[in-house]
Amino acid sequence: MPDYKTVVGSMNMSKTLVRVLGFLLVGIWLSTDLANAAVHIPKECRRDVFLTISGKIGKMTSGANNTYEISEREFLALPTSTVTTSTQWTLKSDFMGPLLSKVLDEADAKGKKLRLIALDDFSVEVDADYLEKYGTILATSKDGVRLTIRDFGPIFVMYPRDSFREELDTPAAAAYLVWQLCGIEVE
Image (cartoon, rainbow, N blue to C red; front, top):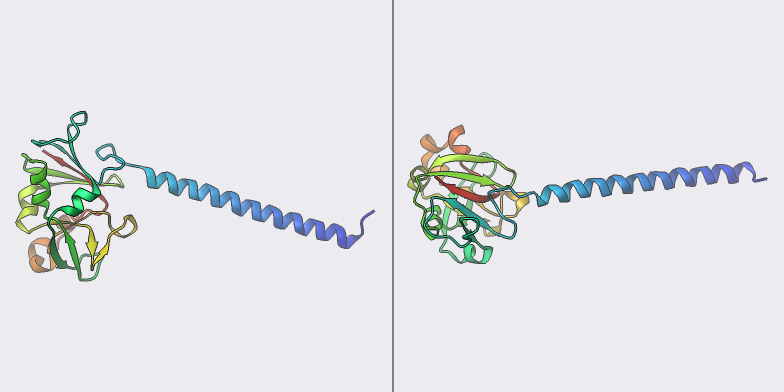
């Protein structure tokens, strides 16, 4: 018959093993949920496409979807502009990316209303002329560093908020600073 120390030692080892297995299972569960959340793509956007433009457009790359799909390589090859500004979420920074108007020209956009769609399913409607008036860019970098999903990327709609405080430092205007942009629907 085992002595008291052996039984207690065996019980402690079993408790430790149960704890380790519990932590392991919780870790697997959390990582699966995070992985599943990371793969969610709104229906207006497509996996492996950097930006999808749909709606009233004259140029399409995908006839089956009636969309203009831009790869990351094509997007990064577009001429860029810089907007130096702060937001409610960032300090004053240099944001760099192509002008929204140039991107819309690539798809031969014909509408005047835009619905900006983010990876998290957030979307907002805005007048295209309103955004173009302020030289809005689709930023892919901040202070020379590429934006990632964790820090407002891969595309962050940006305009010079600091230069037009009266017009652009409002809750309504802040809603147009869409991060994690993946789609634009032209209406």
